Amino acid sequence: MTPFQRPNSAAARDVRHQMHPYTNPVAHEANGPMIVDRGEGVRVFDEDGKDYIEGLAGLWCTSLGFAAEERVARVAYDQLRRLGFYHPFGGKAHTPGIDLAEALIAMAPVPMSKVLFCNSGSEANDTAIKLIRFYNNALGRPEKKKIISRTKAYHGVTVASASLTGLPFNHRDFDLPMDGVLHTTCPHPYHFGAEGESPEDFATRCAEDLEALIQAEGPETIAAFFAEPVMGAGGVIVPPPTYFEKIQAVLKRHDILFVVDEVICGFGRTGNAWGCQTFGLQPDMIACAKQMSSGYLPIAALMLNERVYAPIRDNAGRIGMFGHGFTYGGHPVSCAVALEVLAIYKERDVFAHAAAVGPRLQQRLRGLADHPLVGETRGVGLIGGVELSRDKAARRPFDPAQGVGPAMGLHLHARGIITRVIGDTVAFSPPLVITEEEIDTMVDRVALALDDTLAWCRAEGLL
Ligand code: PMP
Image (cartoon, rainbow, N blue to C red; front, side, top):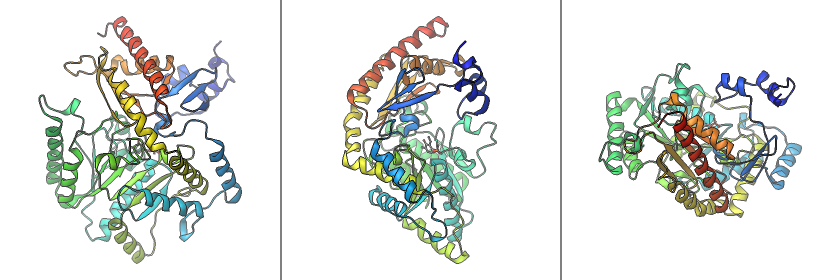
């Protein structure tokens, strides 16, 4: 009898009571969960003590490793004892919230005016959409409300942020996207570039597609454009050179706000503090979360510049209230922990460490490009993707029904690697504190999993 079959095992109780996000529920009821018991640095351990390198830092968030260190735990404890809850509604404030807002404004990649705290990336993007509406109503242009995002974008799962997300599983059977959200070309030359087209020419074409969409809808109806610097959950897609320069010129021409979703890229992921710096972005609003607290407690923030803030302030003043806010937004314990995490980033120069070891990850992933199953490797800083392909020359993906991505996931798991396989792309976003030796161990294990998957494909007659 496996532990899962014992009726009172944790696994059986999980299946009985818990509904899992991003999980096939039928398979889950048959197979049970993987129970993650504890963490240490870049590793987590299952119930049997088997160790796994966490190649995705959990969900792109656990920058400092899986067991929070003493000083972080102490800060949370002390804050709980001093003031275990308070909120910023009705003009209240607490010191951790004030200090964190100040720290974020000070480190922002472009001048920002205000921070509005939320609990998740989805909430931050949802809030951005609401502020964009409020802003354009304040300016007396109620028709300027449509929002453009990109195919394969990931901006969250609330009704509005899932609408921004450009992935089939997030729309299908949820009756999304909602009206007023449009999607433009995904900047991934490997799949969407034409034969013989240079990456720069493809970037020009992406900007032309955006311009054409704006013209077709009417520029006076388009309020904002959302983008991740590197698209993460859509498959680790790094934009081609000149892409954002050209996109931003289009946005400027039509007075369209630019919202940058730094939920994955913020706090050192791409080799700089912000993805905005890596790609030369000049946003009006920034959504950030995840690595802000190393994922230890839920917290997110939306930063907005004065251009956006001033009309919102004036309009809310006129009508008497800014009617938005979450009970737990800017929770004092989360703020205190985030401040401690930011202090550790600074003291230990964690972003510089990530920038220094990033090239090792990129070089080692590129070393997998010759493997018969690998179509493309890509990445920047400490984020990377390895895309499997059925036919390297034709860049032909596997039929999803053949289950090659999930099989790769199982082989990675067996080799002691946890990560996400998105379609046919294996995503990497390890904790920022990973060492070069740990990167080598991780990629060595990935290479073995690729061999296992190749053997499996051959045995299944897929190649
Ligand atoms: N934006 C991006 C770029 C993300 O990667 C994510 C989550 N992976 C979100 C938003 C949504 O964040 P959350 O899951 O905290 O709502």
